[in-house]
Image (cartoon, rainbow, N blue to C red):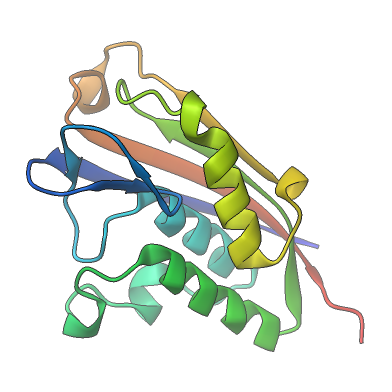
Length: 159
């Protein structure tokens, strides 16, 4: 068994949809980024890649590469997970914490869990997603953006 940690953050901007965990969240702002800026997908991708010692999302999908402009980050997560499977790893569970003052994450947790589980081919019960505020402190507390932390446990696939 191996554990990986992922982190991602993006600032809010006008004129973009807010995508988190592959789900469009109704909100007046979106997240700035080269791809669709799905901070949950990015953090989970880094956690999984880290658990298998396969680098990070920027190594496999560099932001300077135009192929990834406005890319669906769940597609990137799926591609990264294929790399893990090629190295004989499978996800055991994923735990995600989304840190923001708004929007509220709780109402969207079931859909996000289901979407991540579907992409990874695991049960919804193996995916945890939680929303936390930053109690008004710092750039997150001022509502300037979102941060996400993720932990993934992977195991070797029995042949």
